[in-house]
Image (cartoon, rainbow, N blue to C red; front, side, top):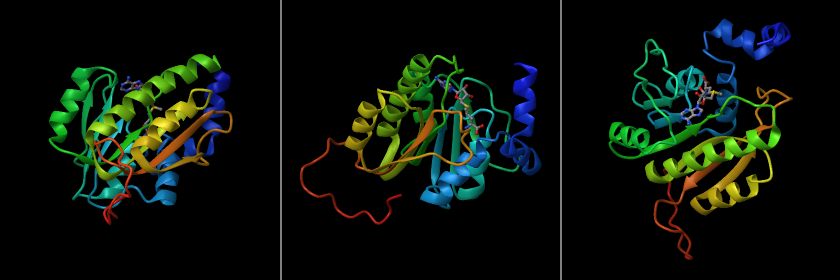
Length: 218
Ligand SMILES: C[S@@+](CC[C@H](N)C(=O)[O-])C[C@H]1O[C@@H](n2cnc3c(N)ncnc32)[C@H](O)[C@@H]1O
């Protein structure tokens, strides 16, 4: 990490705000802004957060869904316990079946929301970073398809690039409403964007006739 990077980071508005409010990462504000706009983290919901370390999104999810809800985070890195909450965490690689099986066992049913802020270390090579991001999104989507309740929703970070079109096509096959959103808290230099996918169609392949109205949808 260069001195320049550290200095810029310290000057960053959201970095300082996160410190003031005891959030573990500036990324917390991205989820706050997404949720303020799309109202995903309603009280009492169950949420799985993929790529959750150090835990900024977990803190926001726990605050917003309250004590009746459930939040489970998974990451390659350990996540320190989030004091005063019932947040559960596991260490694991979302690309591995054993991690997915552990998560499914912990969930023991279906969830309302799947979040993914997963990202690998940025190489600076645009095509490589995009390809890695798409790979993680494919795993997150596969996980969401297995675990979401019909009507459930997913928030997915992706680094933009030419494979996005195909990813969005796959997401649209499983969700009735798909939007792209760039929260203000994303750095202007970043190519990240968030896919907000709502109203999961359910595990069954899409049917030609209109789906029944689901009042409990995201
Ligand atoms: C940008 S950080 C997430 C920040 C988090 N949303 C927060 O608010 O604190 C991306 C995370 O994705 C995790 N990650 C990357 N690849 C992963 C994988 N294959 N399985 C699980 N986690 C992964 C990284 O370890 C990293 O902690």
